[in-house]
Length: 150
Length: 282
Image (tube, rainbow over all chains, first blue to last red; front, side, top):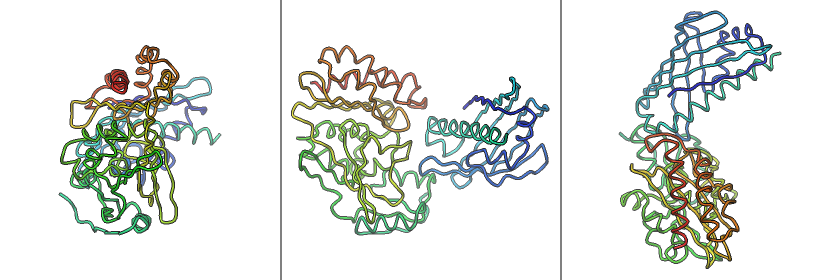
């Protein structure tokens, strides 16, 4: 499943960039993400993703690896996790791009999400919709947080 | 494999509500079990307790009073497909029930379970919305009515509160000139698209209700499609059906999945709306 989102943030690019690397504040913007830890500064992180569709709940202990980092411009990261309780795996390929537009910063991301295992029984459509909601909420939360700080 | 759980056997709605309130998300109502037990066996959901509601009396009756048919939430699909009251008063619902899933599911699956589990590809919710049904719910100390169109919130999510129990479904009996139909289409075990229409033929098409289900996350009423048919003569309404179908297709919030692409489902909504209108008239 591929998702592409863009959010316009009324804040300078440096500030958005710093925010992305402030793990605690950043993670607070990811719906259902908790227990974020830095394993290796700027390279590896861990977190637990908890998501819910009606009565169906998944909990993915997730490792996040930063593959590429271009100062103030681009981050490429990969995350993967498994919920052994319900026998499902999640893989996320994330490309984050920042560009300036006047006094605003455009935060764009392309996410490739794969859900494997029993959870897929819920149906591709339902999972896609949920992932889309999560990404929208995330984008909105980042915007609110950064613009609220001004 | 089914993991161990404790089976609670309450005898009244108040007890069911109390148990649900006390144990929260670790408990779940168990009626027919046709959806719940499958999900539990697959390990997709786990509950410490199942609250068996089948011992609660008075919830598996169908009664006709004051212009409405009241269906107990524990009525099985089989009970509904063979009900004389439905044959006489709500033939479209009876027809729908005859085609729910398969004979094994219909024997034990209940109408209440079907609505409360809110599986997106279920049939009854869509027609109940078009028929203007009300869902009666109870908690330990209170009772309320939820319009069918407000009951479904999202995929697998309803307006029910944690300790609230669906007890009855009240369906108004259509007027003598009332017409209704539900049609579905799919090529997998569950339908890809379901469309329901209800209206009165009273010097034209009046009181039109259109609902679509299965295509999107939850069944929903499509007021914009209704407006294109409302108050029109039969011929005018027929001419507007293509446009109403297109509107309903877009409103269905169809999602692309194994049951078909978004565009395909939107198209089928239009086809089914046209046929449902014809069926309702025949």
